Image (tube, rainbow, N blue to C red):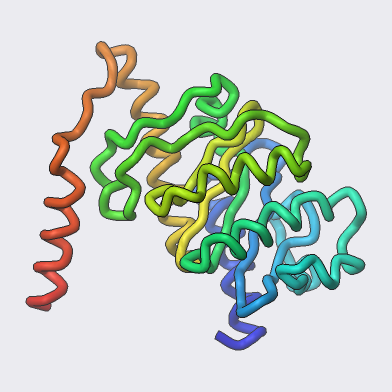
Length: 217
């Protein structure tokens, strides 16, 4: 995509976060799209009415941070280091949806018991990263340790929120949406005796059927 379409994709994704009620009351989030060795990123916290001049480019090495307010620069490294470690990621969303954030505050991993997660490549529980000040070396290193596992594309940030990634922003948004649904449903299931695990072979079977349909379409 060219620069203009990358920016529009980011703006559209922010609108979808709002429309799907994936933003909490303060509408706080940060989003980014990787392009080569740099990323286009939101420059502020409230993304409910995001505009093109709320975005700016910054290098994965941190160059270009001058366009960002000092108080927001602390999240730049969180995005940049994840992209540098996981070259399969092209879009990242960090926000505070109510049900996922409840798991983060309880410091409980989210089990992969909701079948739609499998279709989005999520077949292991979403881990919890230990609390540390936002953007600190301890926080970033905790996130990177979780993402060493190639099966992990989302992490819960203790007492804070969630960070979700994908090959592009569309995949990251789809994963975030399914994860928030899963978190809400798991909380409801606990009132009925608890969420039950999927069969051990469920992920392989789902992936196999997806591949079969792709081959015949």
